[in-house]
Length: 157
Image (cartoon, rainbow, N blue to C red; front, side, top):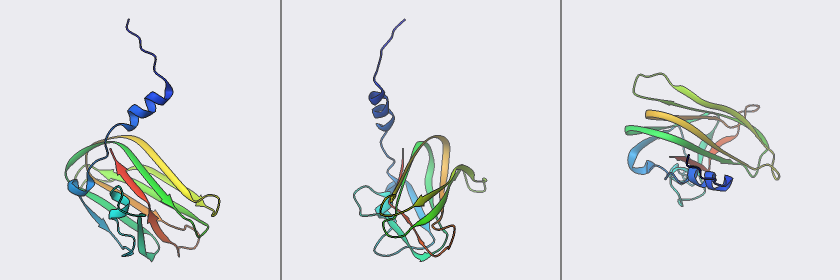
């Protein structure tokens, strides 16, 4: 029997070693609205700014439409809210082709309470085979509906 004992930190490094997909060249993005000062590229591409924000209040949807089917193992989402207290809900789903029903990955609510709780960072281990569409629906404030949705980071590996 061959045995090799590795530390917990080594396992975490191995899991995160997988490079992020080059979404800029692999997919087209569709969004409902966009604040010109916070374009979607700022959330999808590393080093491009401080994230995306909707131009309008209320529920927003963004979707990535991939040119070729992708295998995705990891999804990272980050949200930030530094000004307003609110409870946000998001639903992340995917499909394997046009006409295929969406399959929900996660539905989650998170309460922002600045100045203390301002950041939500989620990383999911998934096995999405032949993914062609990734959809993110955001309800930025489930109580009032007047907040604008934002996303500081979306990465896929």
